[in-house]
Image 1 (cartoon, rainbow, N blue to C red):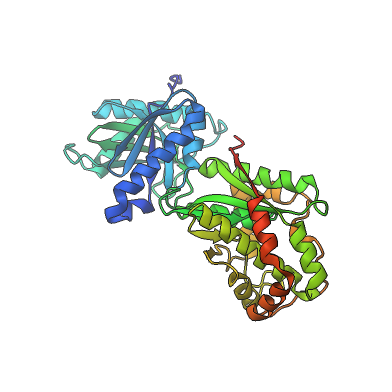
Image 2 (image 1 turned 30 degrees about the vertical axis):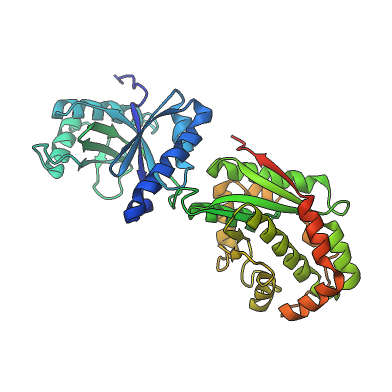
Length: 400
């Protein structure tokens, strides 16, 4: 007979890297707790308690959705639904049997999954060692007819007892989080977001290192249609699932592209587009006290992504430029995009503005001084000032 399992009493949240941050630890933990509150707010909220090395959450209602929200919060290593139990062997064994019986419903009747018991004692006042208690619990839970096989290394099912000063917690499952550092602990970044695969992954990677990321996109009507604008917003909605709502700055870019087409060497068009984008994004970043630009640029992924071209483009910025994907293989970026949830949006067949008046043979070794001479003759600075002034800002919220 299977005992009906009540909802978990608490979600045990573990964090990794931020626990190593020494004097900044309290600030990082406080920020993480605030981010968790924000993540749980759409689900009705919950009570969040910070313990040494752990965060405990008592969600209001939808605990499965709350678990998933925690597992999308940067700084979180893993989260487990846990049940409180008595501080004695009989209670731990009884809880273990209940959890195991319910877990086995996920397996076909003939299966004999591997199993072990793991005990952690943050409370060293308990009279048994972790190893002795694990053995005693396993002996109490299992007999010769048990439908599981004991295996100490990489078992399919692991029953955990966490003995802590504030209580005794039992759990089986762990949902892996993204790790990294809590968003907002290391400042803000502005991502130059195209509709491709790379720049959304670059934004996510910057979030993982503690940056709150906002976005700038460049739109070129009538050469680029409304579908491109909607695609950008859909990408930001997916990324907002990981960091909360985000700001989008939309810049009208067609006039700059026409000026470059009419007055610059064809081979330099794309380089000059990107240099102009860097200047515009730098202005927006300074205006919002943002410390870095973020791009999806990669070294050698396409023929024009040479060291010389990247240096020439970056020289136009007066805010530091972060390129999180600079050494990634394309396959790595695609796999990350699928994990994040941006891939299906990114592959929608909508052109971005850099395809407008695209050169037949782009320059491979552009020089900043050469580009500056061309730009001076085009009077781009006046147009850039206008499009910055006329840029529109909107806030975009998560899609789930």
